[in-house]
Image (tube, rainbow, N blue to C red; front, side, top):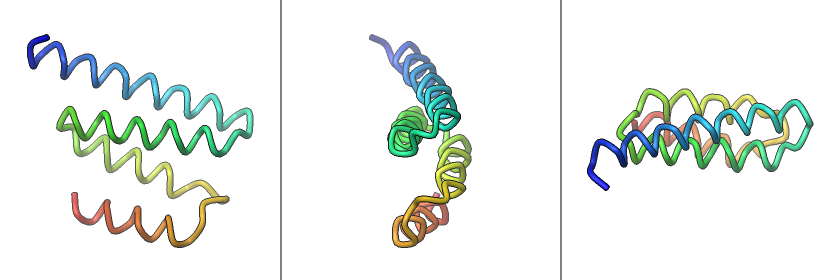
Length: 81
């Protein structure tokens, strides 16, 4: 698969992961929401779309049930982008 197709595939998967995360949030399944947001951020990072990585990590920070230590780690990651 050439680089262009791989990048488009990663972006599509990231968008699908983000969509799933939002759907699960409506259902109240916080753990699955977090997992899908992290997966989405990873795909965006792999595709080189750091603005979307930042936006996705900011969405994770909005989750109330997330422990403070994890939120702190995510903030450090956002600052390093």
